[in-house]
Length: 146
Image (cartoon, rainbow, N blue to C red; front, side):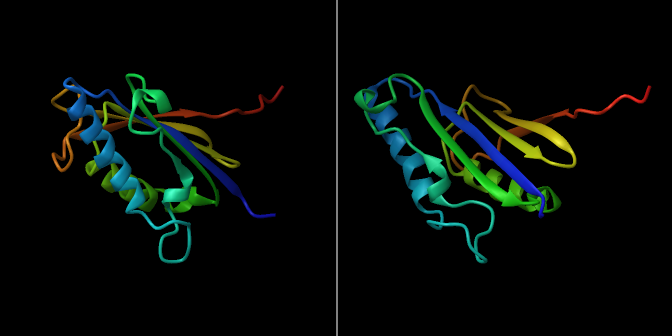
């Protein structure tokens, strides 16, 4: 059987006042996700719009204060191409407004990894500003030899 990798996570944005600014930010984020190919395929094996779920543009559709964009997909051993996956994800983040992003990678061979992005200089990332940094935590279960 092939090795399966599960990737899931969340991108959060906190819209600022006035409300029009919040709606604009949400529209930019929605547009960035809708610009992705609809499904994973040979041309786009890492990210697609179908793997993301967006709340609506107003407070009555799941975006009371924080816009919560969650995503997930199952891959065949994506950890061997993880650098490319990260590159595509960071390209997407570069086009969006956000205050934090977290990706969980669960692999059969190398355990669980959690990647967290934060803006470098401000409280929120602004599209095309290039100010993002990532940190990684690794969790692995191992049997102890007695």
